[in-house]
Length: 129
Image (tube, rainbow, N blue to C red; front, side, top):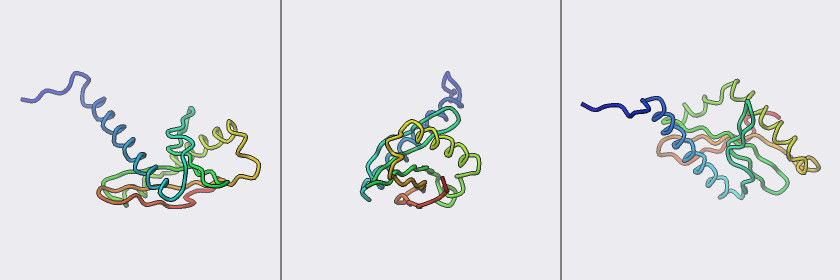
């Protein structure tokens, strides 16, 4: 008979999910870098929000939401209205703390969706900021 780990199934499942998410973000980062984007931040957090990736190319700052699911279509629908609000809150905080990017810079919110065995799909302009 197999016993559950000491910390129970919840914490172990959460650790696996975090590791899966970190790997998905790494894959998305690599795909964007191949397109000429350069990273400014990963997993940028504030109370009430998080930006998975902040990238830069030329004078454009890109805020990226990364979603990985077994099926690519499931990843696409995972950007819920609540997630959009949390992302918008984090973007406002990032911009307020990085005033250098205000003058003459453009901003965009994209998403990278990952499905099992698929190359990351980069979708531009998933929401207005």
